[in-house]
Amino acid sequence: METRRRSLVKALVWQGFGLVSMLIVGWLVTGSAFVAGGLALANMAVGFVCYLLHERLWAQISWGKLRGNDAQTR
Image 1 (tube, one colour):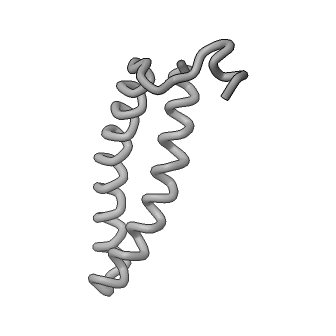
Image 2 (spheres, rainbow, N blue to C red; image 1 turned 135 degrees about the vertical axis):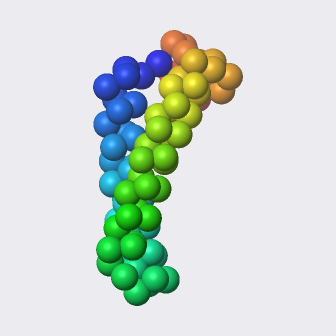
């Protein structure tokens, strides 16, 4: 299981990529950097919370994880 801090950093990095890509797509579609920025920020806020909850939920699920000797033999 990973730490909450690791989950938080992963979520921040992922959202940084999402912010830039949404800003570019929004600007290309709307032609407005202001509207694109608003869309990108809204998307980032929602996506950040969803991603963080998703990561923490999956951290609690043991299915598919290798442990101890299993990890060394595969």
